[in-house]
Amino acid sequence: MSFEPDGGCGDAEFFALGRNGTSRLFVALDQSSRSATEPTELTFDLPDDAISVGLDRGVNLGQLVCNDAPMDARIDSTTHAASGSVTIRLDPRGLGASGCGVHGEVLLHDVVMADGTPIADLRIGSEGIGCYVG
Image 1 (tube, rainbow, N blue to C red):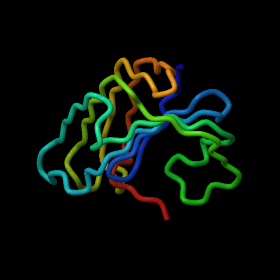
Image 2 (tube, helix red, strand yellow):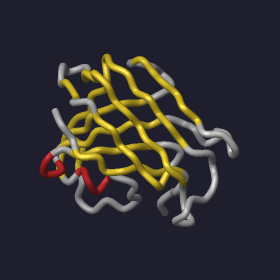
Image 3 (cartoon, rainbow, N blue to C red):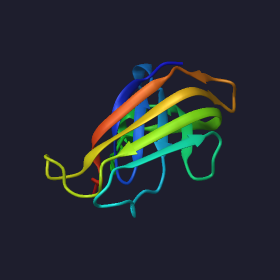
């Protein structure tokens, strides 16, 4: 299954969307206490309790990307990664050029979901890591 990278926010969540907003790939981990002076790079073999990699299926899932007020999004099912690897790179905590957040990226490789869905290798980047909605 292939996705279009859609971005990220918080510390740290990344998202990619499938066609027509009926599928959403997410990667989430807690890096709120990462270094304020040095970049962070972490690699995980999946599954790993320190990171959540999941695939939602439903309706209007694009509304759930870094948004605290989804209008009519609905998640019908969620499955999590059963295998593969994820590398996370995050700039140090602080304010980026936009005044909110810094650069981060996630690289997914050979990911297969628990329901057997293969995920095409993917890079998701964002300048919004550290930004929170609401």
